[in-house]
Amino acid sequence: MELKEQVLAAWANRDLLKEDIYANAVRAVIEEVDKGRLRTASPAEGGWEVNEWVKQAILMYFAIQQMQTFTLPPFEFYDKMKLKSDYASLGVRAVPHAVARYGAYLGRNVVLMPSYVNIGAYVDKGTMVDTWATVGSCAQIGKGVHLSGGVGIGGVLEPLQASPVIIEDGCFIGSRCIVVEGVRVEKEAVLGANVVLTQSTKIIDVSGAEPIEMKGIVPARSVVIPGSYTKKFPAGEFGVGCALIIGQRKPSTDLKTSLNDALRDFNVSV
Image (cartoon, rainbow, N blue to C red; front, side):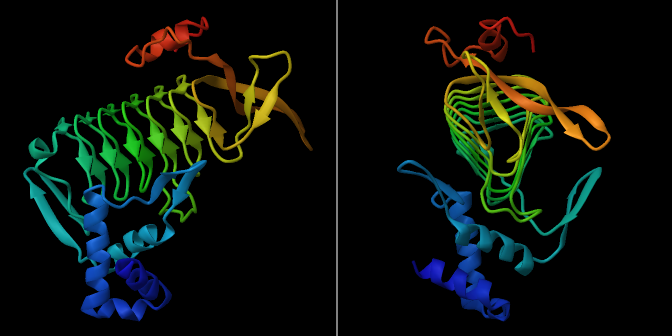
């Protein structure tokens, strides 16, 4: 609670960051986030609770950090943020050129292919972050998730947004999917390749007799593919992208099965 009060005071008056007690409070919060003891969003009864003050601490951390040069010949970087290190003790496999910033939590048995995990993110145990996938600032990724090649999980710092993206346990996120603006994908859902989800994207359940529309959340165990619907504009009628829920994962589909197998149940290629 003391850390929280100090962060909130500094957020209200940035001049306080010139004092060691407040700057050190911000650094202490980042250390807690890095170790997974604090999160920008946490599971709560009936959903998720966003810890706005933790996100504020991350933003102020950028303000108090000094630029410095990092060298790994022949590469050179110039930035404010340290990188995570000592992957062996963390139980994390990091394949060159995987990059995770200090202040991102990585659970045991996480595998990072050449990919990027930003500060404030939480990646739980047993998750695969595949080649050229990105996990944005403060995104929350559950246990046993597969983020396929080229997946883009949005962050909340640039631009500043209220809620982080949440991908819950056991989800498969197909190649080149984009999930941004605080969208929540519930447990064991499957997104086929190229699904794009924002807060304004229509998510339409077409598995029943009548379509059911929703936004901002993919229900648990849903199988989702890209789709489109016709919308009228002054210049005429055009197709607008949406996401289609075409069914539910079957009980016979094991959590460790491939994305292709999960979609094959519905005769959908990926």
